[in-house]
Length: 378
Image 1 (tube, rainbow, N blue to C red):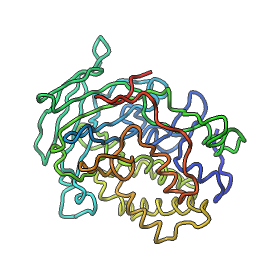
Image 2 (cartoon, rainbow, N blue to C red):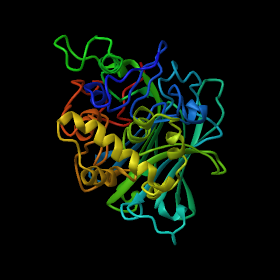
Image 3 (cartoon, helix red, strand yellow):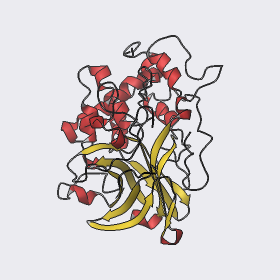
């Protein structure tokens, strides 16, 4: 059933800022980056096994960083193919902050990435597990830093490198039911009701790749991080993600505001070097951010001016997750992302200019204080 917008500048638009939609049962979920292809919220190129949900980067301790990439949205429900693909490279990309701030035509796209941690999987074994290999690629040089089997924690290099791949509880949290009622104008429960908010994602699972590495493996103290899934020959990039909800919100809502086909989400996923985000397509992705910010911020009574929206667009693009190893805390949007960071509240405040501050849903209670940090599957 298609959702309705109560009015181009109505309250429903502001409350739908994170563009999370359920469309019949079983639920088809679009969240931080879950199911961000055009149409009825499907995986990019129809590949659930190459669909990125979220990217995380947070300190394990003073000298180690945790990088994580979740895939396979609604594992076992929407993503009925639960195994990792053998024909997909799962990548966590790391670049110095200056490399992705501005594109230099004299620098090859591959050189914009300081390093990437590439994970390849073998076929499913009789016991249901898959072998995997983690390769660090740095300026063309390749080094295998870990090998393992899904569902098991692997420890390498005298404990300095830890890896995990397999099913875990989806760490994302949001009140989908309240959102759905608001957007579809059904008159049901809204955000922050007296009866209590409900976390739709509390019982979903996801596949996850978790790497714990020494900080020096990142190449700099201030870096930009994003995930991508690609064909082994590098000719197809299925999906990419840095900050939560950038593609789903700012490119996904072009169709709502301006009509037409919402193919911008797929075109955005095709951009290999995030430094091109502001200028690709003649600047249309940057303009999409400006347009959506001005629409949503109208809820505040004083919408962002062109200059204000443009300034924010240049913060939100390139679509990368900034991370500073010298900082001990993360916020999920502007510096790193930990499982408990409430990215929904942060982004609701930004896109609505403070008019909508929270969905009243908090973090899950199954995060772990030790590796692999994310909750066991349900």
